[in-house]
Length: 84
Image (cartoon, rainbow, N blue to C red; front, side, top):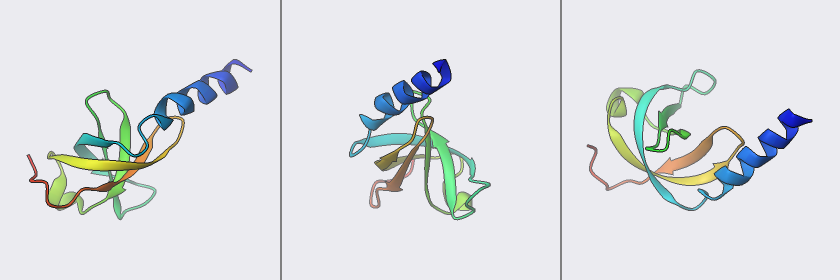
């Protein structure tokens, strides 16, 4: 029961990010979906989005969050914003 409550609370917190633009430091390719990469926000939220790992690894990119799960976010890279 405690795990269910914690998961529900985590999802509720992450849902606040849907529709927002977040800065993501790209770390690795998503092992479950090789067309996606995984990175983290400044708040240490895990974010998945479509990109070529060779182009973005170690870079800061802007991502618009489109979906929230209990322990991660999914989004779309915002094109036209320079990589840092």
